[in-house]
Image (cartoon, rainbow, N blue to C red; front, side, top):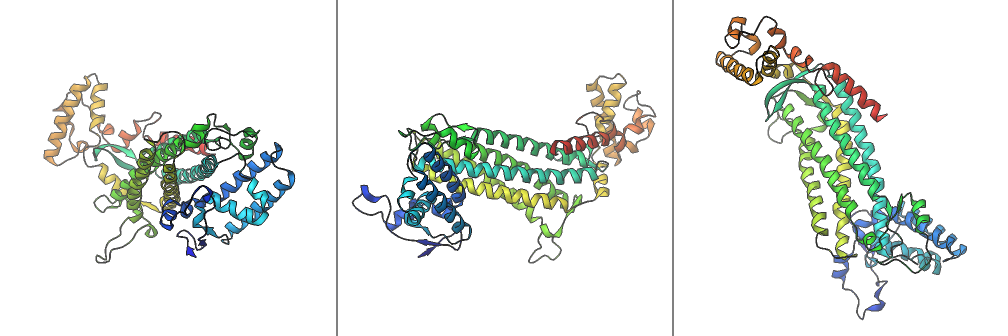
Length: 470
């Protein structure tokens, strides 16, 4: 008896259950190469859910009798308990989760268990199971995204007045408030939940009833099964129903974008934690030390998020390559959809869960942020806008300010530290009111429109965001 790689539950060897067509048994090597039970067993609960709905439809249609249905419901209930309790014996020779459950069912209830597979194939069965699994996973992931959004809002609300440099090309560009910066990630995650919702809607159609590829001659009621399982409708082409994996690819594309957003934030946390920035500290529980350098505090969690983003992006490409040359309908290639899909779900779920917690452990250093915003002439654009408002064409204003920055840089001073006569050398339009414009607060408060970085606008954005999550 072998042991499963996934759980400490046994995997038995035995004769193949579909070998009537063949003159020799499948070799053990081929069994191991083609079996999916090591990873598709996670579909067991969904497989049982689908089988129960299918059995009730068969009974309603008069294809099986009430006694068979009662036996099937009782047997599947027992199998579900065995699986959840870790008592179920998974057999490698039975290839996959479907045949393992079916074999156990027939052992428990006899011929009634053999009738369960009437009017269906493993092709439409697995397509249904994966959709049920992924639908539940999307619902869990959306909840985790919302938890992270709440954590972002809490941190943003604390720092609607905390000035920091905004960057383009990783160079100091204009001052912003830290809360505004964080709200950019809220918006990314908002789009991510919208994409997942769209993905879920397209995915939520029932393949069961397509059978192997052409439908079935039995008088089935697919709409009844769809309603029992919470699907919005049925897949309307049997060939497409069993061979389509668009929904898995689309989910992985959504996941890749979410991870890409988290990777961008991770990169910023890593930079901000670097002593050369010194903008934040991460809680110790998300960091590690060095085996040789005692002073080190390494941001391991954000670094791993960056690395795992490549892993998830790779799964998306793998699924695209898997499907790119497959003819209709089902092919064994499709067995390879599950491991990248399952790992994408696991990686994204774990990342979101840890990220929401990590954001609660971010300690901001407003002094360091403000000091950094004072470098790099962050209010230069405000001086150009000031001159343009006085009537100077913006391109001329841009040139005048560039000369002023060049002068200030050679003097080693900020623009706000130049005297009025020095500033007037670059434009006679400059007057005493310029100094209010050149302050960090003056720059930030002037961006007082929806989407701007003015503290009043950031507070309003946080308020709108909280209402959207309620």
